[in-house]
Length: 292
Image (cartoon, rainbow, N blue to C red; front, top):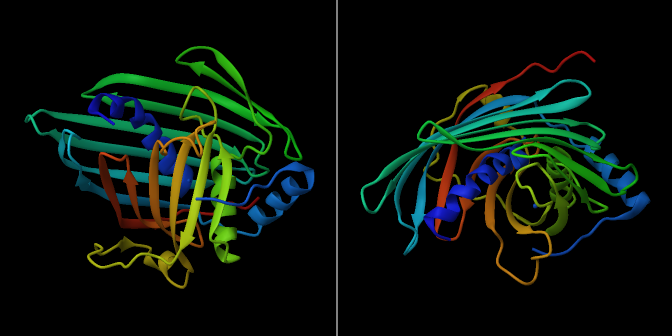
């Protein structure tokens, strides 16, 4: 991947960080009416915690021909419980240094509203480079009950609508199911996931679940650190494939998580092939759970 294609993918950075934290190489496909009911029951069995998390971000590795020599920045992510839905708000601000000495700044924001029944999603993504809006996505999506098909509709950057395949999941439902699979000891799962980050359909997201990574060199975390204690943890490696590409191409990117059972990620590694970026949790704040 060259530096020009990375510009297009920054929209996906914003959406998929939120999708896994707020977000998935082989294996289990769950489809059909009975499977949809099983998914909903499994999702509701996982208790996600409302929180605001702040991550320091920096370059992990830049491989030959990436054109990138340094990355620094910060991400702030909120998961808000609004009784009937989860609201995710996330912002990433990064500064890049290229090997020719050129610097550029990016500012990506993502918001979503996903109902807890997993059937409705509203989303908005704004992507800015050097104070100029490069791309803006906005729309909504709906899924039929019992594992049926769905439809996504965009109002920005243009009016567009397309069908989502049967069995598609939205991000927070997906996150809860990954945690449930991890708790059950499953080592690999695969789903179709739509989050509004692309104009051409859902991703196939494959997850490999294992032991959590070592925390050597992790920064001290400030705030409500009790949210991090007493939680089961797993290392989850996610591979994101464009629809129809699984088994015929490399993933568009991969995301590695140190994931807790309440939905908080202690760290992340976003790997785009030519370079990879670390995100380390530095501050955590509990958000109120409403009386519903």
